[in-house]
Length: 250
Length: 324
Image (cartoon, rainbow over all chains, first blue to last red; front, side):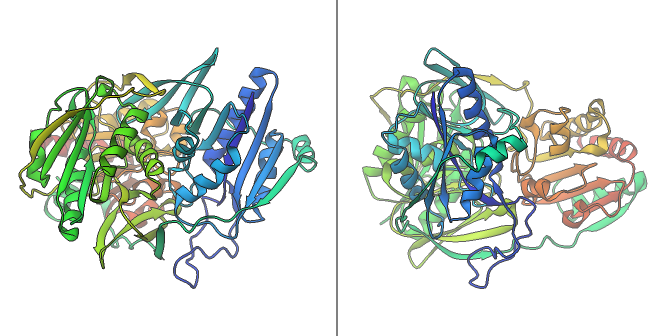
């Protein structure tokens, strides 16, 4: 079983967002970067599928700056076999350019599975996985929360509004992973040491110009200062009055 | 002339509620671009609710039928939509940023070789170009983008674009689409309990966190939700989902669902940044918490400091009176 996992280096979810001087990007000073949490589910699933098959290779591919090598090492420490960094100067908002660069690397490499997190927690683009699938003409299921594979046929479950969709598809395929699919393992010390020696290719790539231009990155509007209506049950009647007469939501 | 295509969703042959929002967003763009709105439905046959779309600004309603379109058919749908877009004159294509829309829109975008902006919360036309706003970094910042070239492909965050009545002709057309459904086949939908609203779609969400102390205590929130007479869903914080008290489908926040209800009631939730990411675009936020310094009070419009096990039942009683 040969499996590719596309991963991304993203600011930690606890990051306090400070806008850079250009008014269009994140000020990265002091920001801690991590492996995108949704990609952890993808790495974990790849490892489990390889373990189940008893043989195979898990290749992690990241698109990003030189520092994304650390992110790849994290996945290698979890147990992936080798890494590829598609090294770029900067990422831009057009996810299709990201998908094109990944698809060019993935093409003709004989992967049974290509896994990605359902989205990255920085740009929330939520699109690269299915775009890669279309570009490679592979079947794709997104936001997979449950997966079963038997004899070249696979069944996935994905959450939709008010229910769960049960989806059948053939392999090879592209899947994007959601929380609930598995519990990602923590890299053990042994894994961390081994990761340092695993192969990691660095390939410079140049992204296309894309067709989305960033005009501005701004803080969200402050929510109007709220009020404490009161304490305990005595405040409930007043709350309901405010919701009806002031907020007009009841 | 630049027209706008509104890609709608149906389930079991009935248009989904978000469809009126999509037509409303599309109408706004079409007015600015000086074009018409074509509403597009993919279904196995005529869709219930299609005749209502003219009210919200659809000039034309096109239903593409294929026996495989009874369930969501990702590949067949993407192909049919891309063909329709290529057939003519669209300056913009608007999807819903629903579970289906977020899956479908990237497929169509890749087929067309066009960029996609998902989960858009505001849009406009400036100097002839579509501009839009979408939350990034867990809602801690807003990204304003300009789309170069046409068509602009966007998906709209549900519950953000309030449907506006703008009567137009809503002329009905229907065409059968040939071709296979594709390799990816939806076999069934395991429905959640009948009558339960999804947190991502409910106009009112009542969410609970660790303050509930144990899973059985969510009963007090279920009773409050029930008092809203079918308009409310029960949500949960990450802590209680991770603890196995509530299903992941109910989780609101960064690793759960993003919700924008009219009213969000946070009960026993401290307000971690991951939670705020999922609900800060709610129109009105109420917090009930015993800790007056809890961060949730910083984003809440109205707060009550107190024991939720006393405050919530009292609130349920008052809401019942309104609906009584």
